[in-house]
Length: 356
Image 1 (spheres, rainbow, N blue to C red):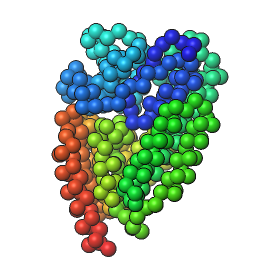
Image 2: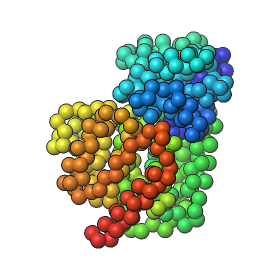
Image 3: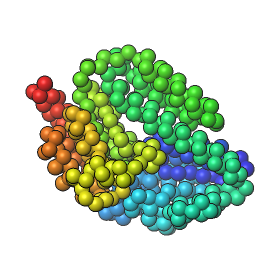
Image 4: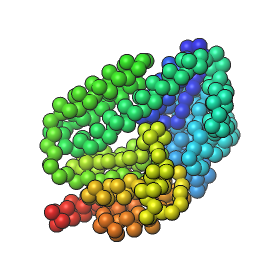
């Protein structure tokens, strides 16, 4: 690697593989993969965080601590759609107060929309980076994210119906390993095409009209399996076809705010927050397609998602679709979640039989 830095980013679903690819292939800089989050990660992050800050702040702070102890010396922090954009500065202050030595490159400082400012950020990572190589690396990383999101969507729609238990999980894990090790666009596409090929060959015992549940909610918690305690996997294991619109591909690459505003105008007149319009649109879309239920996920204190709950109640009443509201904090337990999911599953299952 040209640069002497060891760069990291707090764990966020499977997207760290794409960040790793961009840093190593595009910027020729060593990337330290943040260790998988554990209960200890959350506990440490919560211990050193303000009490009433949202859960993603605590989990990402804990992940930064883990990554620094794994050898990283430079932390990247993203700009955000909400208060996330302010987190990097406070997290840096907390980490320095704990005695960690590192450099923080906070993209919120460069979020002017001007190309030259983003180039400044990249040059801080590697002053000698080639802009042509960085552009190619970024393009490939975007492609990897699209592949990761599509593969995950296929996985959660079908993994609950496999005849040979564990087949989908084994294939998906192999796909993720290939993505982590990929060093070229060719390898990315090969891994993705291989996943789709073998996914289509996995025998399924899937009813013609399965239970379908749509997951909506706050960006980080809805997307990150650790943060939502593997909610999608838990429901899939009960025999539910899971759908989730929220992803980097849909929210960042293909998001059409004006179109969604038009389609949700009968429920909200104004933009209500970072992902609020998208979630209202999703809820309406899932309901109109005859889904059996919705799960609304948010971290404790997430104001934009609290604001849309009355709108979701209106959609629920208009389309006769049940909504399970889940709030996560650092104390949320698997046992409590399991109980609520089992009750929700029993309810939508019995309701489907009555409706049919």
